[in-house]
Image (cartoon, rainbow, N blue to C red; front, side, top):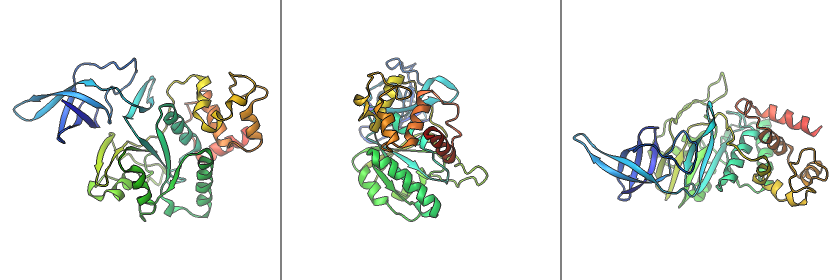
Length: 325
């Protein structure tokens, strides 16, 4: 029998059958998928083959095969630098929820996420949430961040779940597709899903005033069927986004504005750092590329994963200013 994984808890997987029934399944043995070193061999969004096991208490299943994935999105596994964690698979669109100060989302975090989405061929859309909470200063910051990414070509939405602003536009982008919501804890992922589909009653929590960080409400990734013909994968909040190993020569190709200029560099293997006649550095000097993006590129290139969890918007901006000097 074939089904779709809707929830993964690490040992049990909720699978929706082709008939529309939900069956709790376990994994049969160990899976090795094309050499992927992953902490979770089965992810939400996977299409799997399973066998039913009838016991005296309930009907469960055993997964024995995972179909080839069209894509997946990953991050470095916490405390396991040589392994990755597959957040979800077979995604049509990923929506990264961004808040300016409640909690703060940094340029560096956004760029790491976008680079990963580009690397795995997933369309990414930025959703600036909680716009109803912005004052004059934070509104300027939000609009500047939005400008940076729209100039590159990323689609951006401004949303308020509390005031139901932008909800209809978001739903239109999700119809007929499997979408994933991601972002820091506290950016309002579950609240936004509830605004679109109130019957789900997903748990939500408030921001911790002491740390200005969100509190985890979603423990495991889970997919939901929505009444307007869409599927959404709600994911646990991500504090940081450690990059999975990438060849240094490939990284600039996942920055669309860099990729468009790469062939204008004098050297084919230009890393856009100290090399002469670099088109990317020239574009920086002409303010055609955002310095925040170049700063993120350097951090990824240098493998600076130690500080990605604690970066704040101001620290990113100061680093960008220093780079520019």
